[in-house]
Length: 448
Image (cartoon, rainbow, N blue to C red; front, side, top):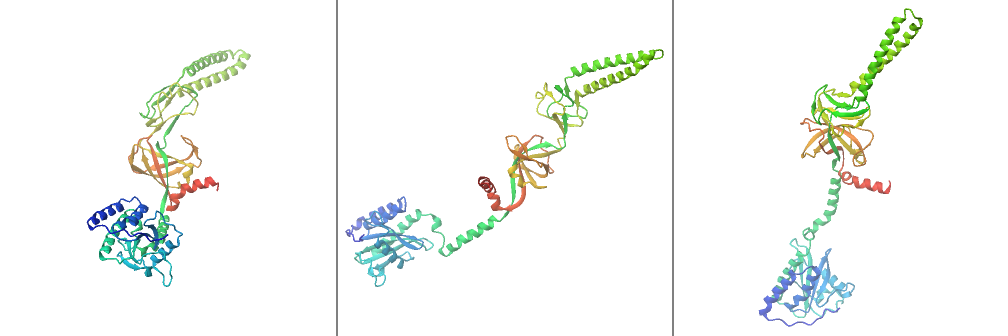
C-alpha cells in the first residue's frame, strides 16, 4: 500500500469558498463514521493541495487508521498501517492545533521503516472534545512546505469534521474526564451493592372482599323445599322477624294425623279406665293403652315442632345478606345448609385470599393496605388478625390461605365490596425483593 499519489493542481481562489461549503455539507450529511471518514480522506484534497490524507480514530488512547484517500478499505495486517499508527502515537497532540511534522518525526530513531511514504512534509490535526480529550485526527502529506493559508484552511476544515464526528458519537463517550474514568466502574459497583442491601418491606398482593364480622348464619332447620323468602337481599331486619318459609303441606298433614291418633288413644284409655274396676283383662290393657297414648302425644309434638321450624326467624337485627330470592324459592335444601347471613353493617372485616406462593409474607399483626375497586385512589389501612392454617381452593383455580384483617377507624365500607389487598411482611434486602420471583421460578425449574 503506497501513500504516493498524484498531486492535484490547485483550484482557482474564486472557487475555494464553494468547495469549502460543499465539503462541509458532505461531512455534516454523512450517515455514519465510515461514510464521514471517507469524506474526510477524499474530499479534503479538493480544497488543499496534498498528496495523501489519512483519517485516524482514537480507541483507548491509541490512534487507529480508519480511512486513506484513494482506498476503499484498510488492510489491518499491512505493515505500513501498523507503522503509521505506531508513529502517530508518538507525536499525538491534544492541543487541537495543526502540528507540522517531517518524515524523520514519524520514524522511530534510526528505524528506517515507513519507506513507502513518498512525502516529506506532514501536518497532523487532532479532533478534540471540549474537555480536551482527542477522539480522532487527520494527517496530510506532501513534498512542499505548508503555508499559513493552508494551515488556516486545515484548521477550519478540521473543526467542521470534528463537529460532524461528534454528532455521530454518543455523548457519554465524550463527557467523562479521563482522570475519573477509573473510578466510575468501582463506584457504580459500590453504589449498586449499597442499593441492593437497602431494607424494604416484603409485600404481596391478593384479592380481597369486605365481609361481615361475626354474622348470624341462617341455615335450613329441616329437610324440605323453600316456599318463599320473606325478605329482600340487603334488607334491614329486626330480631324475631320472619325470613324463610318452607313448604309445610306434608308436615301439617302429619300433625293432623298425629292429633287424631292422640284423640283415639285418649278415648281408648278412658274406656279401659272405666272397665278396669270390674274387668281384670281391662286392667292389663290399660297399661298398654297409656303407653300408646304417650307415643301418640310424642308423635304429635314432633310434628308440631317440625311445623314450627318451617318458618325461620331472625335471631338479631341487621342486614339480610344473600344473593337473590329467586335463587332459593322452590329449591330443596338439606338440614344445615346455609341460606343467608344476618350481619351488622357497622361491623365488617376484610377477607383476603392469599395465594400459597406468597404465604411467606404473612406474619402476625401485619400491616395491610386495601384498595377497593370502587375507590382505588384512597387505600384503607387495616391490620391482619388471623389466618387459616390450611390452604383452600379459591374461585378461578389454585389454593390460597384465607386471611382476615381488621379495619381501622374509618367509615365501614359496604359489605360485598371487592378489591386488592397489599400485605406487608418483614423487611428484606432490595435485591431479594427484586429477584424473589425469578429465583423461585428458577428453583422450580431446576428442581432444587
